[in-house]
Image (tube, rainbow, N blue to C red; front, side):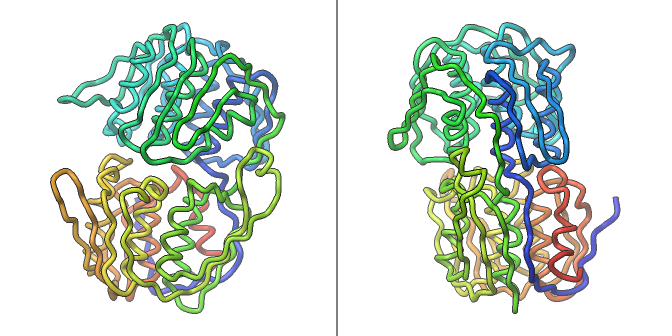
Length: 439
């Protein structure tokens, strides 16, 4: 394990592309496998998480070919998957695990799913409970009142349900909808706070009978899924977030990020940064991604003088993956920034509240957690004069990339213990950094 060293401040300038959106990639693979016909998935991101889904489908008998960031999936229809010869391994991809649970619950065979060490710590009751209400037979490792991987799924006949999701989670919603494709009767999912809608958009593109009424999604499983022939995956705005924040907290910086997803459910970071006076311009464009029903465009970012803000609980689901790097941005904002109800960060690949507080405090940031009952808020006073330090990735890709951004804007040298975890979502992260500045 070779530490990564950042010797001094660096200001980014230039034009970049980021890998295809991770959330969309998972759904494109899975829904293509459940559809009739062959689907070409273009701009497919070849990182650990998306490959976990691809490899799981191969093990389930789906024919898939790859060539130059283009993946061809030969659909098997909803009940055409095959019993795998051994346990499925989904590495540390929570999306792969949870979405597959919905699909495998309605098959006619038994499957065991094993995970990497980080995903073994992720709670699964939130998805197991609604799937069991649909008739799913799921066995899990239990610890107290919570359930964790590995999991065993004994395929069963499912029934549609009406379910109000208690915790804002696009993965839980999507697992229920994918199970609903195999169920008898309509499935209704209600959200108190709307989450990203990639699954709904993708299902529409494949001809599913799905309707959205405010925060209620109604799926009628009678319609056959049919491949649209081609799916284009726009750039991942969660990957773009690191370059957006690096630019706004730097001096004399400008970065143009091209062909990025502008899905309204994913723009939470942009909305918050603009409220903090960040100079960010979105330029919608029509390209192949818009045929999937996914908004897409370019993002132009300039150096900015940030002002503190309050991020309310209702905003958190739309920027949950970007909260670590948003904490870095808040360190450079004038005043007190409060991020409310961040407890969901405790159950990501690592405890991201702990990982970010540990690192930013080492860099002399004024950051703390305030607990009120079960609620946890993060409070950051800025601007902070961040100083270089010995930093830890905690084996978490978003923590790792966020502290790289902090180190690039700090005074003095920083050393980060390990960046191999960025391969989970962004293998080309360091090369993209170096294209914008001398590091």
